[in-house]
Structures are given as C-alpha cells and as structure tokens.
Length: 65
Image (cartoon, rainbow, N blue to C red; front, top):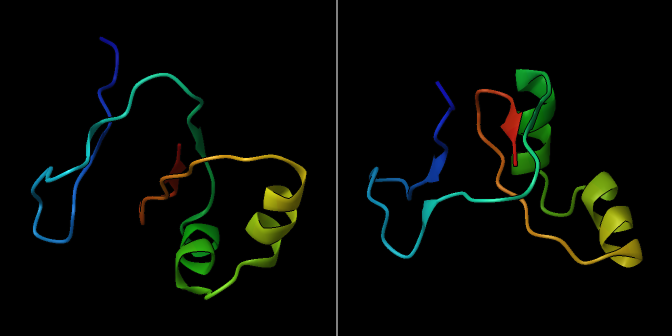
C-alpha cells in the first residue's frame, strides 16, 4: 500500500493545503524536525534557499517532504 501524505492546518483541516503530490519524502529525528520548525531562520534551510528554490513540509514525527 502506498502511503498518502497530506498537509493540514493546526485545526486538522485541509484549508488551502491538501494532499502532497510529487517531490521527495525522507525521515529525520524528531529533534531535528522540531529544530527546523522552531527556529525563526534555520541556518540549514536558509543556506539551501540561497542555492535553489524549494517548498518544504516538516512534520513533528520526523517526516520531511
């Protein structure tokens, strides 16, 4: 069975979000995902953004799309 990923807001509703299609999904530690979410400007994402444009969805469970 293929996994289905979706992006929701804080209330659990899709709103303007929805199913995540295409792209890549990988796992990281829950600690790293919290760091990526909590930092006002994460140095890793900031450096990556200088090299290429991207969209990212980070889950508290360590899943990154």
